[in-house]
Length: 361
Image (cartoon, rainbow, N blue to C red; front, side, top):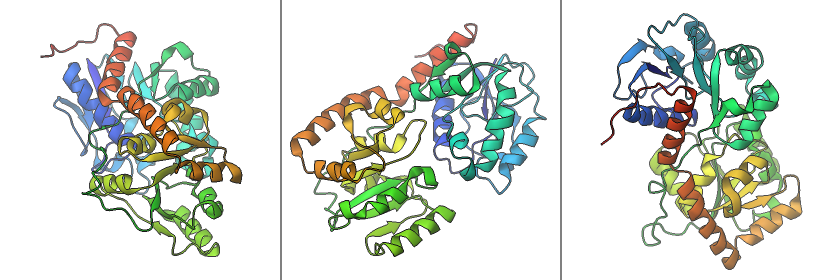
């Protein structure tokens, strides 16, 4: 029996949680499964173990510690293989597959202290029990193999997807032009997202654009607000807390460009959502974003004012913009949730060919 671990899902998933929900739904349609689940999304499948709400991602302060302690007690009678769509393993599972989305916490330990401790001290032990590891990009696949010395041939890529129809461009008669136009950053909760560099490069954009930073909070937001104040950008920048799906779509559709200057990522979903919305993307020139975005984005060399200036100038090049949009169409056909589901099915059957598939209509 294939058991799917959804114990990490809470009521308002973002990032890892959305991926976990999509994978669980796909597996419930394709395999005979049971689930370990709490109070978040649960697919149409028997519940083998119920998880307390307190162990979900972001459920409360100390949720990571509660989750680790609870996980050690979970028994899975009859489980042939345990699949976790995140890195949250259940140690008593004799044979399991986990999904490592990125190694950001190892590169920036100060912003993810508990996660750093888990990845540094516990994950190496978990990997000894893993029949395979899944991840979301080829770049991260090689990172995992190099850092943990895990066999590359046992690491499989099951990429993220984007619902292109959900983020389709709005017609001009529905969405009035913003005045003045704005640049958008999404999910900028931690310093590795590098909003600070965008503020430092304000000479390249602040005369013509505003900046909207969505889903930004905590100490990082306070530091950015202080930086914006010192640069005289108080009237040119807007910070938003959590935004729901409807508001996020509007932000993408109305933006002159999405800025994504991260120092490191495991994949990069917001740029794909922006491309699906018909919005230009300016992204950091790092390996994983080159892998995912191809020719559909403009890339900036971080730390180079000249590169930033060229990127903003490129937003006005209609010919180059049209070429990027053609490239975006091909990329969006590659990164769909249906293709992710197919990759997930293939990877699981590679790990265990005896898993029972449903008869699909």
